[in-house]
Image (tube, rainbow, N blue to C red; front, side):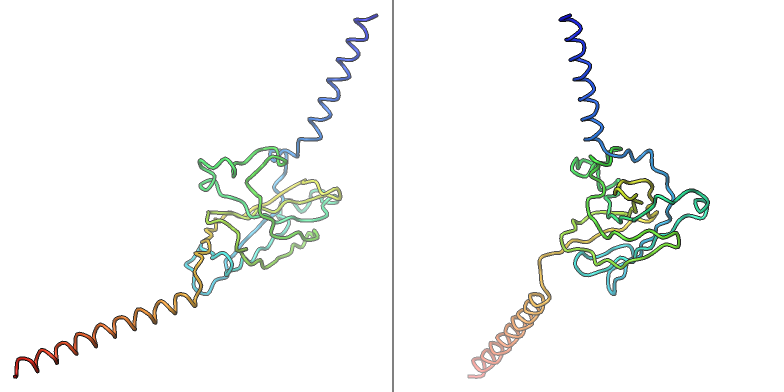
Length: 205
């Protein structure tokens, strides 16, 4: 009798552990179908191609259902969540950026860009690169969400984007430094010319 009670208790404990594990765990990225085509273009008046300046430049992001996925069921597609994700080169020796197949534990895509209503015709958005985005190499990923907010599909850009972080300097500081530098050079030239004139006067006496 006692052994039966113990076995029943152990079975119940195992079931609770399994339930807790399933609750804590997230969707596995490896189980998601790639059904979206995603593109991201940098809008910058001065930055070199492929580089976006944090706090200044914009990303024009567009997504649409892939042609070969049009015939699949997308009835459960409700929203599309756009994320800025660290590229593999920017994950090396940085555990806080490491990818994990369990999306609940994944640290690759931590920066939210926008969430839009799903439509098979696609959509687009313009996002200003936030000031707090660290300097690194990124790509954009779009997660398709169902009515419960669970990831059911995805798509991502094939091109990489390098973000240049804020230097901490303002344009006014650069202008002031330039003016001060010009004033210093002018003062030095004036002093040298004055000394030259004094030297000529002294030699003529």
